[in-house]
Length: 85
Image (cartoon, rainbow, N blue to C red):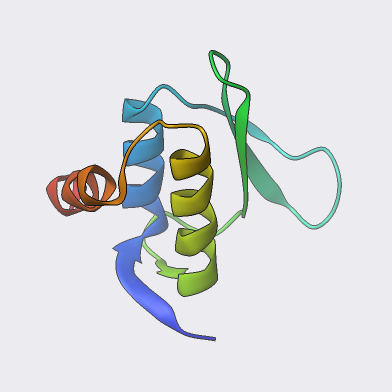
């Protein structure tokens, strides 16, 4: 599986800046659930360390959820990821 240049720590920083809260998943496998209370957007990610690079399919899933709920268009999201680094 292909990894991106973005870390899970950078991704979490951006999600939180967009208004997402984070909680641990209750079931296996271990993970994190990011929820945007105003819109109902939800992103589920595995519990990787903040320094590990994000798998490409996880980044696509986040981008899709943000776009579906109108939280950030792709260029804004990409810009925020660059600044988080």
